Length: 136
Length: 130
Image (cartoon, rainbow over all chains, first blue to last red; front, side):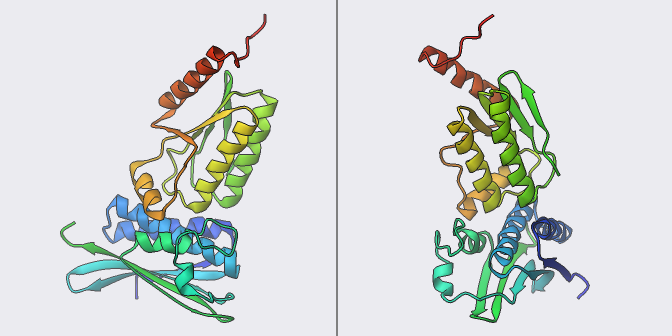
């Protein structure tokens, strides 16, 4: 895919890079500047989660289309400790890191589709999508 | 990138110029809290107009700055949160509860002047001696 963009996450500088790249891909795909901000904020939270729990991982950003819709898919992958209870991790205020516990549930509210798959001891993959309607 | 901090009268003004890493934000927090003491500042303004995203770490650090500065006797006001940034913050569930905000630098200065006047009226203000 020509629009594939991969950002390795291993330090706080990479968090900034990932969200800036996400914003620029979203801008090129025609998202409004409000949506660009929302996408950048969601990417920032996922990148931060990778750093906090897995130390390193990667974020892939792709433009997708489905019929008359165009969208953006963001995949955050790590080979970290995994999430034992995904249901709880998606609840507001639940954190095992001493953070605010808003990362996953917050990012989910910002995006249209959100999926977490995690295996303890193997890692976590979060896939989230934002759709742009052609009329907007 | 280090955030420049200007001293204007009894106030410190930190004007964020570009995207900040977590380390930059932490450095800003340390610098402001130290300077509140060094310059005997009564107020702190953090101008975030140039920030195009505020995530959980940024919000927590701004809140920490405001609370720490208050413990050191200075009031903080965050100015310049852009409309889209505000929208994303609310969706993320991020609040700046207990922290003063103002539209822009001008409003922020007016807010701090108001706080200073109230303090003097309550007899807690400092009378500058010649």
